Image (cartoon, rainbow, N blue to C red; front, side):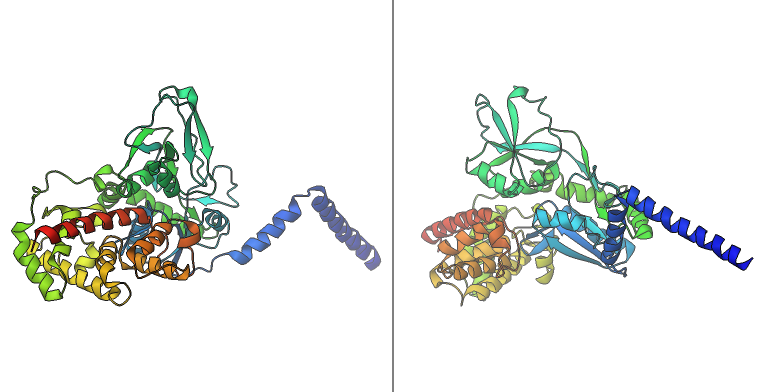
Length: 455
């Protein structure tokens, strides 16, 4: 009897083993799936109170402006941190190819990167609720290219994936797309300014944020349907993902969300309202305090006059891009450091601005040629000192004379190219340096004019 039971048990076990082997070999995809699952299990992000975030580095979402970090996605994430009362650790990646691989790695709680997620199985990609909706638009020079040059070539940047619709454009059948897998949208905008191409396309959010840096360009008509910008969530964080999605749904109903959209995604975020005071055509009204503050801090009062004119045209209630305000147009974090607010008097703003300019002079005084000191200071006032120090380091590394503005400015411009902003000597990352170089040219032209006409 025991032998009979043992034989029966042996047959059952053998049958099960045989069935398993047949099942596995009969479905070749079973083995890779099991292996992938095991590999992915090792990559799962260790859960903690800190939310780990990887954010793609470009102007619409994360940008260093006059020493302050700003950007739509950045500010949304900081609000998430505040509302969930959990610290958010943001890692920045500027290479779209690396960002794409990161998006598939399951190593962060949140990944902020736009690419076509529709064809990816939920096993690999867990997509959040929409963060914001946008749509593709043409970017062109303000002096519109001749429509009679056929074909009309629309350039797209790396990883751009949204379907374009030219049916509403004039001569719609003559438009075609040129993909540029190695170029960022900022590269295409530089090419537009230089006349190398006539049209580029990007989403409206990016276009609005970048326009202040490319004053020769304009936003053209939309060329496609609305689409959602979403986050990629860690698929192992089920409860956390539910929390994040619920927060997004509720946050989009708040005034704070609307204010962020107005700040970053509306043309009015950078267009100066004409209701803010009246421009003065001379600097004489404030000459007394300008001279006194500059003398106190040891630099030429005509420098601060030239900077103020460039920044605000002496409009006292001016509110600018990124939250800068007043005649000096300093960013809120800088204003806080020097003890002023948007309700401070113009005189107090000027004294704070003079102190900040003195601080910048002290940074560069021993690093640059005396004759060019104010060029470096004006550049640092516009971009923040970090980007100028990066340009100095690049200039020195590649054999230029880093003490002279003309040569350093070339490397500030090059900071918009991957091989330079990813260089090991660079600390502040990507920066569209052309607009700062133009800013310095205008400030110093006015300063040099003041030295001839003002005592």
